[in-house]
Image (cartoon, rainbow, N blue to C red):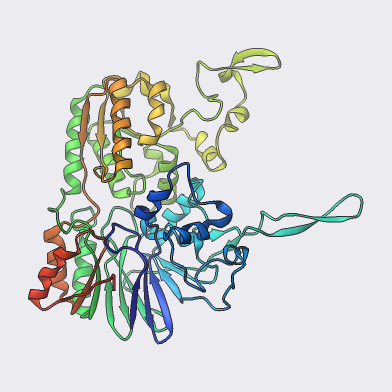
Length: 491
C-alpha cells in the first residue's frame, strides 16, 4: 500500500491523504491549506475564478494530480483531461473547510462519502456563502450555447445554467461499504461540528483514520465508542490528528453552559455571544444557557438557516428562538429610514413589504415572514430579554443596537496567527467604543488534549501511527518506547 500526504503535515488542517492499493485509490479529506493560502491571499485578494486550480498549484496550495480535477478548469488551461478519475472516492471526515474546502475543485465523477450531517452543513455553506460554492454540485465555466436572434441568425452566449450534481454517498454509522479495493466504515466521533466521523478502512492494511476528535464535548460517548471499535479492528496503521498534543485537555462543554447561565442571570442588560455558527453543540450550550436565565437566544440569519436544516435531528426548533433581521442594502426595515418615493420623501416603514424584501438574498427572504423575528429596535428596548448571537463580522450591528453596558462572551479559539491578532484588536476597539467592558472567553476545544490523545492511542494500540494535523510531531515519539512505530508522513 502507498500513503501520500498532500497536506496536514506539520500544519493544522489541510488534510489530503491519498491511500492507494493495487492500482485503486481513495482520498481521506481534501481541505484547504490555510497556512499556505494565507501567505498570498486574504478576504479581498482571492484566486482568480477563471484559473482557480492554476493559481493554487502555482503557489503550492494544491498538488497537481492528473485525473483529479474538474474538466472545465483542466481543459481551460489546455491540459489533458484524463478519461478515468485518479481515485475511486473521497472520504470526508467532517465539513470544516480545512478538510472539505477544496472539494469544489474535484472532477464530477469522483464520489464523495460523508455523513448526513456533513451533507447538511455543506449545503448550508454552499447556499449562504459567496466564496465557498460548488461543494455538492458545480456549475462548469467556459461553456457557450447557441442563441437565436429575431433576424433568424444565430450567435452564442455564455451558458451559466449548466449544473452538475456530484455523486454523494451518505454513510450510516458502523455499516461497512465496499469501495473498490477498500472496505470503509464510518465511526461517529465528537468534534466541533455535527456529523464528524473517523474511518475504519480494510484493505491490505487495517487503517484507522481519526479525522478531528475530542472527548469532552456533548457527544464524548461517540468518541469512546469509536476507540473500542478501533481496538477490536486491530489496526496496522493509524492516521491520527495531534492538534493539541502539547497542551492540556480542554474544559467540558457543560462548564460553558454553567458559566454563561451565571452571567445571563446576574447581568441586567444584553448578553452578546460569539461562537462558530456551524458548531451546533456550542449553539445548544447557549440555547440552554438562555433557557436557564429566562432569556431567548437570538440568532443570525445564517445560523437560522442551519437550524432549519437540522430540525428533527436532536436540536432545538427554530420556532423556539428569535431570528435577528439586520438592515441590508438600503436598510429599509429601520423605523427611522426615509426614501424618495415618486418624488416624495416618506418613512421606509410605509412601503409595501415587497420593497423591503429586495434588500435580502433569496435564501434570507423565507425568514422575514416568521413570527419570531426581531430587529435592532427589540434589542435596544428590551436587552435583558435576549442572549444575542453576533459574529465579529456583524459587529456593525452595534451601531443600530447601541449595546452600551452589554456583557460579551467569546467562545472561539485564541488567535494563533498575525491576521487573527489584528482581528482581535479590531474586536477590542468595537467593544471599547460601545462601552462593553464585561468580556469573558469561554471555550472548549474541538480537539483532544495530550492525555486524551495519549489514552486514545494506547487503548487502540495500532502497530504504526502517522501523526498529522499537528505542529508537534516529535511529541509522538514517546510511543516508540511502547512498541508503536511512529511513521514520517513527510517522506
